[in-house]
Length: 395
Image (cartoon, rainbow, N blue to C red; front, side, top):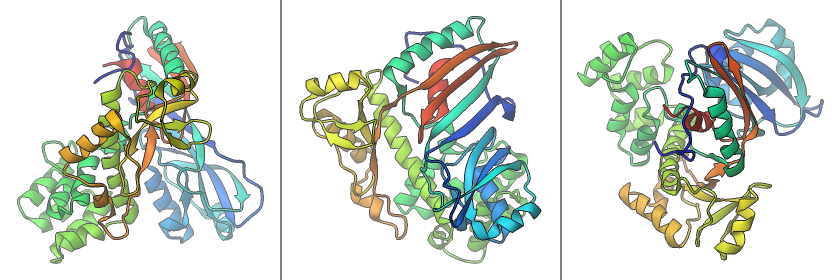
């Protein structure tokens, strides 16, 4: 791992030993108006994913999953608070709704359905355990650098799934290697920790689809659906493309994320350095522009008004020029990809966008705990707490 703060020792320690060690709270993009055809639910959950929560609510309210709006996906192994939106006609049914591992804290009406990305950011409160005796002082020194230079805008470990293979699934999907996709989705038995899942993965690799279906944990609904279709004689392509579109988009997005992280690593530790040919990001409004005079723009970067970017590849994304552009095109060549490939699967077109290489760190605090320390900070939407933790812990 290459660090922005490589010259500063880390705190060591571990996090997420308990769900309560990792708290996340959405920062809304706008207040609810108090009127409208949608009901915003402020919900606290623990031990389940946002997708699990949405499925529970859809079942209990007799809706389809797509009827429920959300601004962002939150971890399962954490205590998280976020908004979901439902049609206001379901308001009377909420009193009878029983959720597992989640509680509706409050409700408010609004005029539009909540959409992905409709949040300003997230606040985090994270407990680190078994840290170095000087952990608080070390964390404060690292926070000071990150507050001045920005946080590397890496994608966190949660982006790549429990088997750390979501990006590989996305690549298989993009390249239409459906048989390999199925193999990757069911999992490598050597990488699976759950004993029942491991046996199912072994049965699948041995070609015994019926046994694999019987052994696969019932919670793995998407994998069950895929195995059922394969066992019924459907082609791998048909089985894969029948999976929920949000899941397939998430996997393609994970592949975009992995390629972005590769380009980010090439720019460390100078993520605030504007290079000739860069496409820069304006933090005030999210607009991007082609850099024509790098020395002139550097003063704006030093004030954290702008930052260099790298692409989340897609068929419409604008690539940089000069050295930054060479790096981007070289990576595409190494992956045997073209931008047009992201337009190749019906209903799963990925236009792409530019993403800043660094983001501002808000309100960082480090306080001692009897068994470690507590970290508190805020990040803009689309950024991950693990990007901060990587720099702080340095395990």
